[in-house]
Length: 210
Image 1: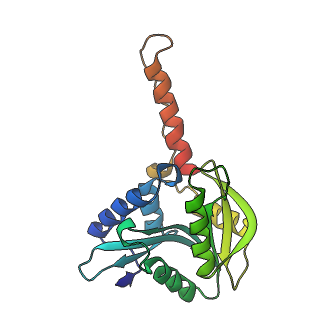
Image 2: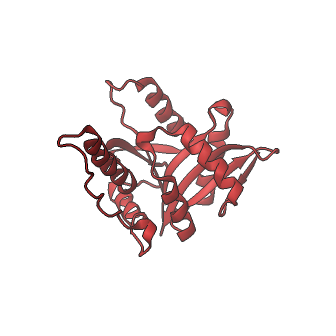
Image 3: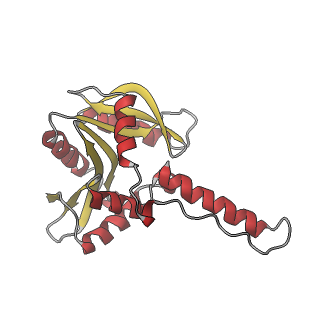
């Protein structure tokens, strides 16, 4: 297994995208083109884990600002989980940024959640692998998440807000401008189609800018 940093090649981006959509549920995904663009700007970085056949087994997407590292996503191919790959990638991050605060978010341990057992396992995984519970909640993408930080350097919600604000600053580029309002559709009054289109537009906007 080989861990790679740096800006991925075109064919690697396709593999990353496939894994990204395979691992993360829709409600937790940012727009993939946004992640690519931020990586091109230098505001986002990707670690990838490839096997000897150059098949992608895992990825970490993170952002760095001053001495703060925010891990957006840790994704391991479901067919390769419980083999130590996630631990391997986290160890790499913890060693590479030993003098920085490292933050990540996990789903809140809501007893009423349908996947509460999975949430508990995920939290325990991070607690076993160098992270600690901050006791604080962060809200993004309309959901609540628990904030964890690396054990050696505590971090809090203000650190998270600082790096998030840096990450989402919109440069003067068409890709990062809000789309113009959708022209009114010539449909019958009360048309379900028009209402659906308006709802879809709001959903895309909130997903990109959380």
